[in-house]
Amino acid sequence: MAPRVALLLAAAALLAAAGGAQAQLPAPAAGAATAAATSSAKYICTDPDLATLCKILRAGGRGQGATRLSSPTATDTIFAPVDGAFFKDSKKVADELEIKSFDAIFKDPKAADRLLQNLIIPNKAFTLAGWRSGDYKSLLGQELELSSALLTKDKYVKSEEIKATITEPDIPAGRSVIFKVNRVPVPDDFL
Picture 1: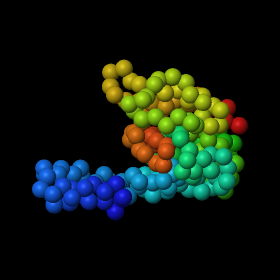
Picture 2: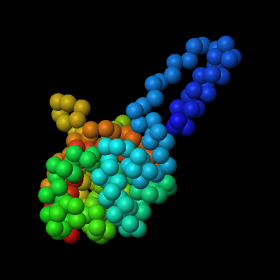
Picture 3: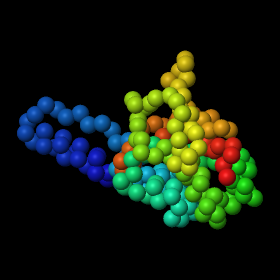
């Protein structure tokens, strides 16, 4: 059971024992076990929607992006493509990384880590409440443009080539915040 859920249950029991007002507990979130992750890497590798990103993280070895995602002290914003995003953008990712096929990324630590670096906005962990449209630099040094839709509440992250929609925002992971996205934001001049 996630520590956060256990803490809520303990607080409710104390209130009930003290005769206090009836406690209303939130239902555990679908990913309650992963909500208490101490690093972005731990969250990524326990979320079933991010299995491909976890494999890329493992392939990144000790590279800068993989190391940063594994750090419990990193304070970053991370855009985590869901598995379907890699399926949709596999050819573009392979082309931009100059690898033979998308599957080659799992055997190429440099390519894997460069992709990871481009998914991280370093030293800025913000939630939707702190969302500011504009250009940000990824850990790789490439521009990522954050924007909001005019008529809906949709939020986007856009590289030079691909515009991804935020599908699940504000996931705490250590001191960082993860946003799940439906595409892989790779820049045009990746290497």
